[in-house]
Image (cartoon, rainbow, N blue to C red; front, side, top):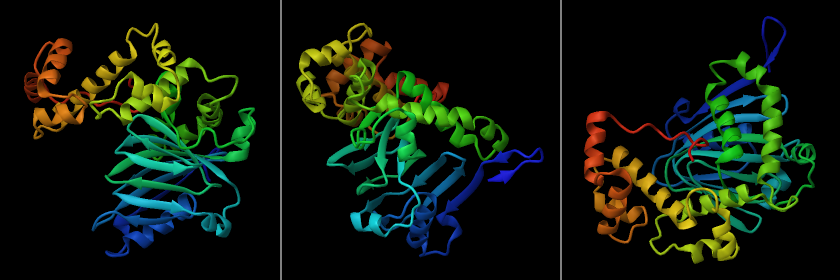
Length: 337
């Protein structure tokens, strides 16, 4: 922690970047950086080159960081845990900003996708795998204290599950994303937000925890949306497949979307069209037919019809409009609907 002139204890900020180490030492440097910023893990690059950056803010009751890295595989085994020198056990809440990250823990595996939240625990073996460049905000909370403040018994029920950041959870996610991205430029402001950040971090545990007096329908719907996003490219994905993936009945799935203005399958189509919209504007070299397949439409004809019905123009016309009007406004993870 650092002291301001008026005696306030400001958050301590530390930066790690492989660009600051000798060429060829990037992986060893990154392992040490991860150990200092989080907990000891074994990491290996995927591909011929590796690079990463961590910007870490250390507060009295939590740590908050932005992390960017090229493809890597990360593992923390039981022996790593036994040999670790950490004073406490931590929960890591990952707010995914870009790229996908496969998280495996407690017998489950899930995909952290842009706009989602995934949690893992340093006290249990885990693995993280990214096949592409990714960026995320990481909130670290002392595990026992977080569960205690949330009024819950510690368990692994919420680990390695993907939560869609919508509703109340989206507001909390947006708070931490914005704080992490601005803390190094305004440490005094970050310090003044510290009490609220501690309370909001604890609230996230309660929002994501299944089985606490029954999971609210809003959270079940968030899980359904997250599942749709992960499997969005599958043209065969239907209500039966979504319900099976969530371990609920078709009727329960349909009920989750009652009163939202869209059916479950209507929401899936909207998610596909939204991803297609972003791809059309941000990947101008990609063929429209390829975008159709990558967003789960069974044919280009089906894609054209669905897109025109919603946008009032063809995908090609929408892309051309983007060239003259400028790119579409970026989606802020945690704030999209």
